[in-house]
Amino acid sequence: MTHAPALADGASSLFPPTRAAGHQRAVEAVPRLGAAYGRDRNHDRGLGNENTVSALSPYVRHRLITERELVAAVIARHGARAHDVGRIVTAYAPTGYAADALDRARADAAGDGIVIETVLRGWDARAWPHATRGFFPFTERIPGLVRDAGIGA
Image (cartoon, rainbow, N blue to C red; front, side):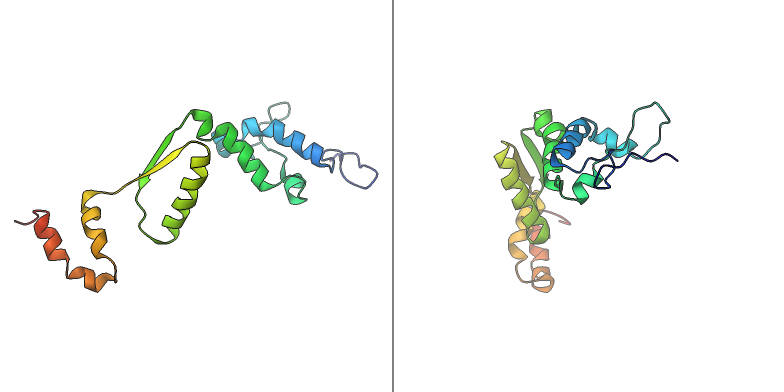
């Protein structure tokens, strides 16, 4: 097995320990980091064929480049903006972690000119206002909701 020549401080010349080198590696890797990378990464295509490994790990590990920088670059290249997406439609999340995450995503997307729209089914729109104190008080409302919806009539 051959080893990469060492630099004066013992670091490998394959991964020069500078932010500039990490940035350059990211610039070269980002175009390949879309869906194809997720599908093909870490597959050895053989000597002389395209390498499917990004080789960004040493730079991220030593904080020469950050995950946030990489994610922003990948989203800019492969994300919604790159595909002229203006609206994302998803299910309504009433409360809790999902609602909080959706609120954050909505704010982030708005900064990019993307609208996240939630859809609430009619049945849910009629039922949610009554789901304020847990399941058992809600069960008292179920017969009226079913009757109003014309179910079982």
